[in-house]
Image 1 (tube, helix red, strand yellow):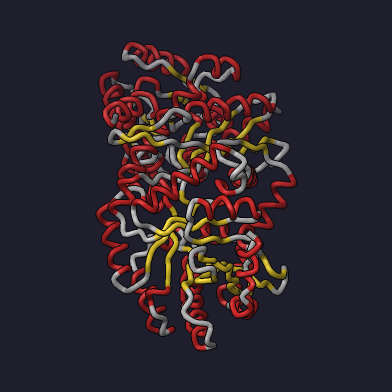
Image 2 (image 1 turned 180 degrees about the vertical axis):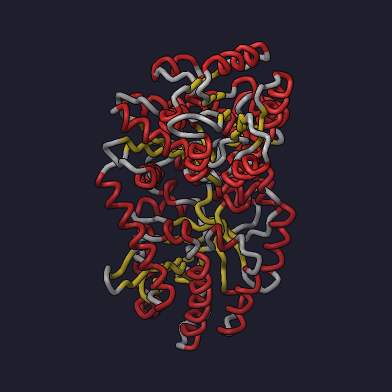
Length: 594
């Protein structure tokens, strides 16, 4: 694969030497004809000849050549002035300039060098010397461009080169009164795959993604539909799992949608790494010029906002930017800023949902669930801020506080005479990946004085993907401190019997999506029955969450499910209300109903 990637990008993505656009500015048209004739014999084929030096800068800006052959002594505007103007413009600073000069004095050459000349070619021009200097200069440019403007992993253009192309395309689009589209492509849940399977697998997937993106936008029907022969050259990797593609000359919105759909189709087939099939999808945001912005930074921002919106709608979707999306984007930024203040001001509280042991007929524990008591927004439920906390990295300090507070509260209940109750705490993916998680848990245990046997840590199946040996060691090291582990949302991820046998897990929590329609929906009922039977055979306790109806409770009791959690018994409660619920024995009444 790597050899294929290298050959493809060296031969096609990097400007091939013979395909270089060579611009010549000289007031001697006969000389330029001779130079072009010789270079055509050498295999070069793209030339721009400018006899009137007054037009040089306009043509440079429009055509963007790969190299400039520049005469110094010309009427109207001499080569020194052109060279100085070129080097002052950010978008032209890297264009190599070979100066054509009949002057041999050192002062002339020194001045040209000071103004940014790359090389010199003496008049009358020696054809062999011209071929060598041109080849060497283009080779150096290609090497420097590769280091500066191309992503080292995928060999796609990087953010810097893409922004440069975007600026240039915007100028051309304005001048020609055309429309264009910008697509921002974000891979869905790639971080989860990268964290679970490791960076090597992540890199292989990103490399293959780049290949598929290239092929998807090079296919003949797509190119012919948009009328752009080198559309695939407008593709870039902006960083991480984020890609972008620029679509110039887009007259209709459906052309951008067509490209988005083709990209999603290209990514639909499984990625095979080390014999394992991995599925990756993409959420795509689309911003249109001039409707959604006339400047590059605005278009980039709006395309990114549309991608974020598409991700919220579910995986493998695309969305056009709109004012409503802009408002949502601003709201997310506002929530992130408020979250940072909330961490500093300790604005979070925990509510506790009772967990009823069906065998003992009483509350034996609870799940600690975070709430945000915002001064501006009131009590904010977790679904409105957890995803933002994870994306911003704030989930790590928030998760640390949750563990510490849950341990402290468990001890407080014990001191109130309620007894030792098992308190379960969700551990988010980024928090679980922390190198110091063991230290965080140990400190929480020591500072609170909790008996660690009554602390249960809930992790998801996705966290168990990849690097089994290191994960098993991490789990065992934490278990040595006393806590136990539960797999949350079981049945929705990637677990297998081999995982359950090898990992030091104590409990399975059946995801509420399987509980909602039991016992009426046969498939869900069969899944729940199978999970409970499997857990019992592995000597794991099993929790059913999301129980809301008597029929669900009776069905689970008939299968000898161990623990029930859900609104049928109680919603999550503040600490004081939870204590009152336990002391009042309300759960026994609920059980007697069944």
